[in-house]
Length: 110
Image (cartoon, rainbow, N blue to C red):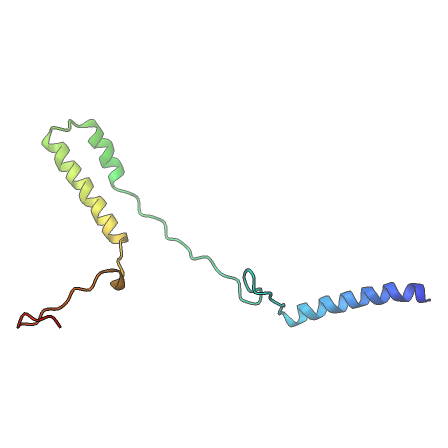
C-alpha cells in the first residue's frame, strides 16, 4: 500500500498546486520581463497612409525637359507637396527649443 500511496500523493499535490494558481489568477513575478498579472497590451492600430499624389507627378516629370518652364512648375508643385507632408508629420516639443530671453520696453531682459 505504501508503494502506491507516495506516487498518488505526489500527483495529487501537483494537481492541487496547479489548480490553486489558476483559481487565483495571479502568478508570482520575479521582476524580470513583463508582469504576467498585468492585462495584455493591445497594439495601436495604424491608419492607412494616404496615397502619395507625387507618384504620378514624378512619372510625368521624368518625361519632361529639365530646362522647360513646365518642368520647373511641376517640380515646384512636387516640392510644395513634399513640404506639406513633412510639416504635417513633424512636431517639436516646447522643451526642445532654446528659450529666448524676453526684452522689456526699457531694453532690459527679464
